[in-house]
Image (cartoon, rainbow, N blue to C red):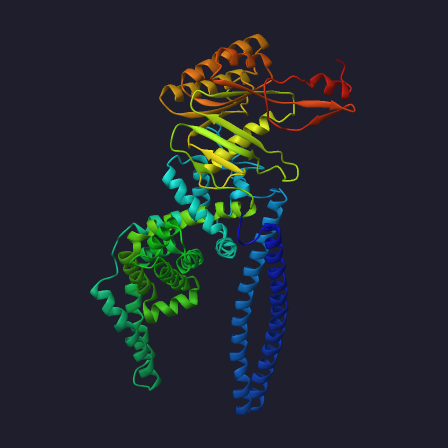
Length: 601
């Protein structure tokens, strides 16, 4: 569906080759510059020796230029190293995308800290963890953008207007792959921790004026004039060194007595210049791009506003970098003696806070929103045959065709339809082992989650009334809490019933209800549960091996529909078509598989 590339693999491979070639050229230039630096350095040393040994002033002048050339080459080398890092980052981004297209998520961020067994669905539907939806979507460039993405996947949106606005934004960003890769590269080069920005935001809210007073502002002018003036008079033998030693008392009193306060100010922003420059570049990237969608323009407008986020954050980056000069003891002493450097920077910090601190939280909140949206756009780009859902405003419904799972390869994936029209509607899905029941449940659930993020879904068509989901697929026992499997399952079902009785509208997805008890109890309990779910006005799907549950369609003819996955035996092999059919399953395969594996039946 994308206008950029029908085949995303071609795009990523082209990008990988382009940046790999550029990276090779830059590495060659770095080796050349390194060699030149060594040559210039050695020639300069020889020139200095000859100039001193033979008092050749011309040689001294010529070879003094070698020092200037050496400094220039150092700067060129630093610039090339930055370009090398940029190209290497883009190579890595495209290699990751190529791996994702092959279905490989090994070594990628799984977001396991966002997994909660008590959550309505995220564990059952593989939203987080290994081979999870989070791994397919996460392309975030910021620590809090990553958290925003996790929250969005865990908290479905049911407001249709918000979903449509997000769809438009994701659709537009999907067709800006170069922009998205630049956004990711800027973020990936400086790998931050959430504590870095959290501390910075907390610092920005604290207003404590200490140095921005008339006295200190006057001293910032007087101190350097006095210091350099005394040195000049000493040079002309007007004053002695004693005068300079007496002068040192002034910066000692002004800076030394406030050292604890200045150290505290510095510690709050120390080594934050790299982080701030990263965000300044991200703000620039957002504000320099043109958008059509209302949501993206709103984000851009809040970042630009009356005061530019880029200018504010980049100016703070310069201040923090200047404060870090004090980390070099000799430089710090010189700057504080003559320029009261720490006080000068502290005043700049106070002025910055007064002007910009009130905007910080909003600016970053908008940037995280953009980060999260561009991640979903990357997912949409990788699935060009996905479609954006349509939302119904009437009664509850899911009407979809050829729905597939994102982790099943296109050439192996078998799509199925979904039709549920209204509340109190349940599908009882029967079928043999490995026929596709659980995969179908997860396919339905994961596409419902995607649709309620504004993302496209993997289907030919998808019409849906947004609703919260509750699943029971992977319930497990807990040795730590002393819970049996059966008790853990009962707790999960009790949680479901409590939510429904409190008035919540839920789409329920359950797999093999009450599997932790004996057949008679399981059948009786399952039938009672389904009847209760219908009476509590929920809708959903329940997969089971218990064919007797299909008889509930006779008791609730307008509320329960039987669906099945079948397996055939051909040439002494099992044949699965993974297609959902009407009715109750007829074929079983457990005994066949046991015999095939040499287990006596």
